[in-house]
Length: 216
Image (cartoon, rainbow, N blue to C red; front, top):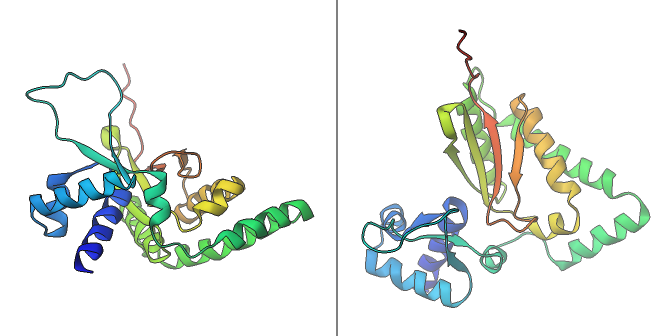
């Protein structure tokens, strides 16, 4: 049972923080490197994780960066979800009845209200994004926040989505969710990728400071 629990924690961290190396997993979870490698092997054999290949051409050999891992679709689906296939059938039914948009907007309004309540008073944008990430985690999302290039943006990453099966059937959900994030933070955000669209993580870029343009 303990092994299964640790394996779930390994998979959960890969889903929320991947691409992530074995060394980082061991440090974050307080597990020995050998123990992490055993879990990584088992998860890979189950098809729940895969080695992440960064874009571009890379030379293998000495000096090669350490392997990093991401969760596969099967791995994401194996994580606990609050929605069943019945919910997907309900989405199809509502679409056929012409009231899917109303359902999506109603559910996202409820999510938005909860997220808005978590926003700290007088906080910086970076602090607001961190609060948003924690609030989403409380809702069952596996979230992390990463710095963007240049320090002007951050990326809100969701490695697991409790409504992924619904979002796959109704892309309107992801679109409404993005609008909700924008309203909660009171800033334009850009959704770069989604789990429902086949990516290993949902990624939303959020500006945290204005870009200063030098004159002359």
